[in-house]
Amino acid sequence: MGVKRGLAGIAVLLAVMLLGGCVSNKLVDNNAANISIVANRTNNLKANVTDLRSQVDKLIIQVTGLNEKLDSLAGTRTPEGSAPTGASPKPEKVDREVILLEQELSIVERRLENLEQAKKSPVPNIKVLAGTTDLQAAKDMAAFLTRNGFLVRAVDFATTSGYKYDTVYYAEGFESHAQQLAEALGGKTIIKPLTWQSVFDVIAVKGGPQ
Image (cartoon, rainbow, N blue to C red):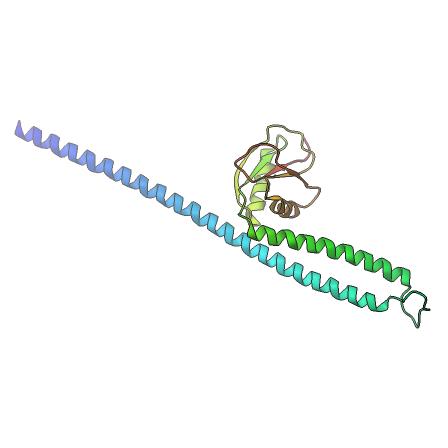
């Protein structure tokens, strides 16, 4: 009888040890998964910051070049009431080029301002939705955005279908991020404010043929 009780006690002890080992392994696996998620998010944030800095540097160079062109053209403009000399360009042509350059400079400066604001604001939580019946197209969009430093949290179907173009919705305070995302997508991407409550700051809807 004592032997049986002893064997039963050993069996219970082994069961407890095995169960404890399973729980311990599960906790280790969960911790490892959480660490991996945090590491991925950190890498995405670093890539996003690096990309923003690169774009800002390029735009600053572009602004400098446009200002130099404007200064150069300003020197070739013929003052009113005086006759043109030598082989200088026609005043009408110079004025037209100056206007175009000023417009281009205004666009570049606005993009630069948006990027500077994006650097100061928090990184948005992004969701990608399929605006058609093609969920894979939305997954491809999410993968593209992730490769370009955007933090995509989820992919799903939109509540309504029939989106002809890619559309980006943004919550208050995240317009500059939406514009940056739309520029990355290219094409005829439409930007609209988010008019419903959502835990996501930016929602990109993949449109296209039905």
